[in-house]
Image 1: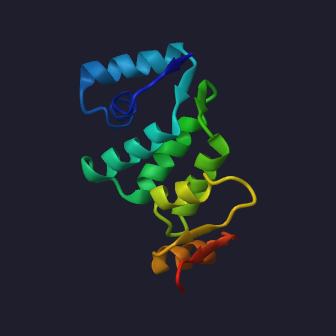
Image 2: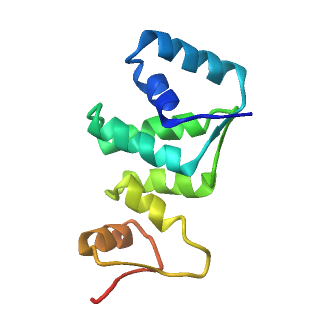
Length: 131
């Protein structure tokens, strides 16, 4: 198994550097791949800020990636749940925070809009701190 860095995934998803893209594709075709949750989050940030992907495009690309048979993602249930919330208007980073806390805990935020979007998306156990 090989754990990959953000830049390997970015090359794979953007094909912006032909030589590095070829190496990334070869690696993904030959090995079992481990992707850390932090790498997923950083990849999303790079795709949005550097490559100007829309949030939904990022979620779709990452979902397809982690669903590959040879890819294992850290806390895959949390990641896939978070990626599904993006279609409902919740930013990926916020959604990933929502699904990364221990069972039986509630999630609080000062961000009123985030809490409202999450509740509209059907998330339970989230509330606004101080309101």
